[in-house]
Length: 239
Image 1 (cartoon, one colour):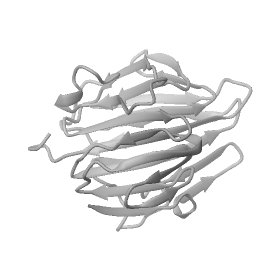
Image 2 (cartoon, helix red, strand yellow):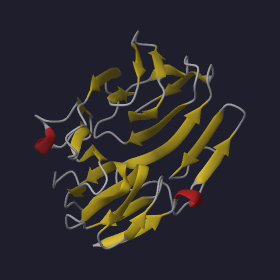
Image 3 (cartoon, helix red, strand yellow):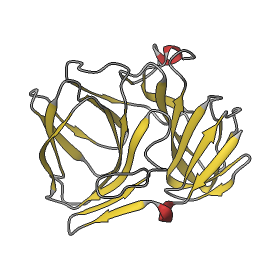
């Protein structure tokens, strides 16, 4: 098992009067040829958008875009006529496919904080589509949220068009424990709180770990609990 810890403060940062965005991988004007993604993940943006502001209509193509809100609410509208409001505990997926335009806006009175992740699909030029679903995270277990993996076919909240990748979320009480999946590539992100990862040590809020050939390591939440996002990724022939 190889573990590369990526501290929160070492991420790329985009900051303006209405947006605070931290990028785990190369994004926009921030480019590092050695950090353009991990597995099928090509973007992992930790963003806070001020009240009454947001992203005006803009295009995407050939991406599976998964949004997970941590605080507040984010309104979605797109060129396919879809609309929705994403809040904590609700999973959202947009398939950009052959091309879609959408806007993301904070209509609330408080900032919205969310993580948006872009995954390469296993087929290009798909019909654009949108899906959102409520989840129950009270079990303290690792819950499949957005997956194309066969093993998650009956349990994932929403489906993504990448048969070799899946994201799960765990909301852990103080001292809560989960076992991470064993997989060729695993991306762990501590979205809130703090935890200790077997073989890697203590992790704080917004720290990430990139695991290769993971063996199913143990993760234990700190005294304040934790919320973690886990991407499990295989090669297309293994999934």
